[in-house]
Image 1 (cartoon, one colour):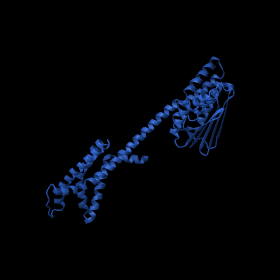
Image 2: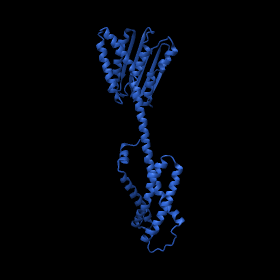
Image 3: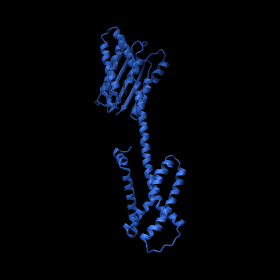
Length: 353
């Protein structure tokens, strides 16, 4: 990708200034080159300046008429046909300019006898048109290609951003509904746990609605979010569910994309806290070492219908959602594996910062 300084120079410099620079460099370059043969630099620069009066219309007709109407629309045959016509027409004008202006002014003592319409001389004069035309078309095409690349890149980024927002919005609705239902039940019972649920739910909502708008958040906040979520779910499931969470951090407070860990934990509660499992349990292990993160989330498994349970676990919206987010956010720096045993599911996520 081009650096911002290059973009500012390329697109924020007034266009007319670029055109002045282009023609100045072109006239001086060829004036000096031809002048080196007889060391009459001033005369040859003046000739190039007069030639530019014919070359400029040829160049701008090509840049601002033929390229937008034909080349950009991939009508290549018509474009090159019209380019050939432009070269011939303006080569003819260049020949007339030589006959009526340049020869009388710069070589007045040289005898000159040639028919006005001299096909050989006109074809020779095409060498005064097509080089500058070629250079101008290449520069214009590069600018057009670069702008198209930037536009396509922006479209891709906008699409990914919209997809990320949509995926993020799907992460927790059922959790919120469950928590609100539990809160409603607690308030009916006038339970002492109700105020704590309200406070933790408030913290969760504040984090999800406001702090998660950033591209990256401190990992400590993600861990705090998971701990609050676990405490809420403990109130919901009570003593029939054993939850253990350990955190080993040797890296300091790294930054990660928001709501990246919660879906794995949420999925574990969904499938590991079944009433059909006598001793339901969930184990969460988060380790940060050598600028890498390893998350292990394991939960007990119901055996009432193993094929259905396996499909629900691996193909549920939560895991499919987070897999897609990982592909977008960490395309080359993550590894996600799901392991299954006779009585548990284990998810292992590895991220490289």
